[in-house]
Image 1 (tube, one colour):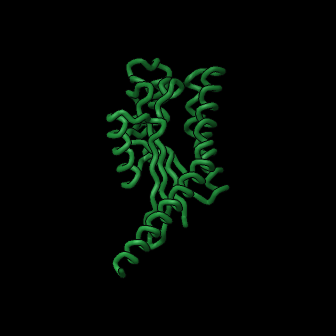
Image 2: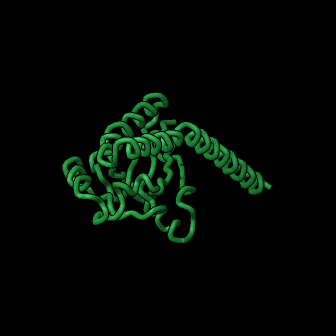
Image 3: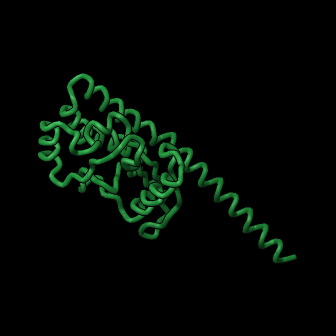
Length: 188
């Protein structure tokens, strides 16, 4: 009888933890994900109005400003990362993020839709619980203007990318591939 009681307690604790994780994931999505269409919209507007070269400062400066503003508003660490970085100082994933991105690549290769790839978990950092969340960002048409096959980018764009990003590894994408991810760290 005692074993059944302990098993029931463990099961209810597991259910409660799963519900907590679902609530954390839902709240994180609701607050963090709206930044992605804002960034894409700014990029698209700039490309249409001023050309692809003019969009470089949007991606380099304005998108990170939006992320910093959202971080300040929520108290969370929010950033974009990629396995193929354009800006290594800002976009290099940590070990947890790199592992999730690698898993996303496997899941996408097995047929999962890139736009649905996400995960979240509670981890311990410096002895404190932190909720980690990551959502894949698929390469869309506006992304491919600068992140497509390097040999398809026009010369002025290649020159500006080389000037702004001397260590650029973020080309060669095709539509729908995982360009990177939005990642969130929430202290609990």
